[in-house]
Image (cartoon, rainbow, N blue to C red):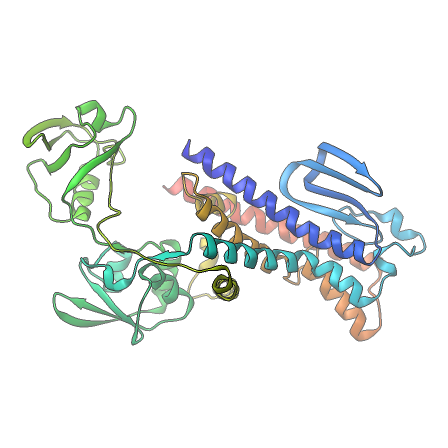
Length: 441
């Protein structure tokens, strides 16, 4: 069910963004009286699932869920319509319009995606506000993994500063280190101040594992608030409200110590000590091969989160600022792909990676935040100067405006083919990375 919810959210989000993007092209084309022959959500290959012609435009839903498109008269695009381009230009065609008009039609999709993201951020901030965990409220320090240990971090460290600046949002620390080339993390370790240098070679591991640190949680009180159906805990006789006291007679101080013990003994018979109605009792239990018992606990009250509320007038500049910052951060991530030190290309993901960022339960705040983020990604990716993308078409129109010479239709046709080959290669590479990650798990 969790996977299904993620898939539904992904498809809904991408469908909304494709429609918004193509509306940008469509409306600017209509503004300059350019005929739009088709407007499709998804590609109508091999067939269209639905289509209806209204006026000069055929609207439809295609069978191949890899985006969508508008077919604009007099333009060499993914439809590769050679015959139309052999005829003299008509007043209603794209190629008959001025350079600035064509630029606006080409960039309309990117512009709409960017504006749409800003509108979403403004709406989310005004409706829900912004909730975060202040670093000063991470009372028990951090818990980290092997990557963190390789950096020099230790469980229980309290992060004070990054490059001499106090950190406010705890969960923004690692993204800040990755994107802004931070050099030193200052921590409080058992009352002593320790400076930990951030080496360049560690960035590649942080990209693969951005959850390298989390807030440390005490083991107790461990009250069971959820039980998975047919889980080891349910089979052993655990019920809601039970308080877990020990495992194999070990009374843990920290939840991460409990997790480490479970990971080291997964699949082995254990003795779970619980407290029920003020009396302790032992239950025989066998964790899954993944080291899980199938129980959940409520940790919401352990830390004090902060929520910043906005009215609509406050949310407007704050939402725009957030959109601009998110775009800048994504461009920094994109830059890392070309760095030999970070090997960020190994972390490039496809649809599985995108789908995994959605929560396993339906949450409208998360959905709209992620949709805004994906809208900005779509805008940035589409403006890249690669033939077959909006940015590739823009590049050729700018060349024509500057030089006064229009590239030949045959050149544009070959460029379109080359661009599509590049895009399919990137698509295969990104989704291949996803499959390799699943195999290696």
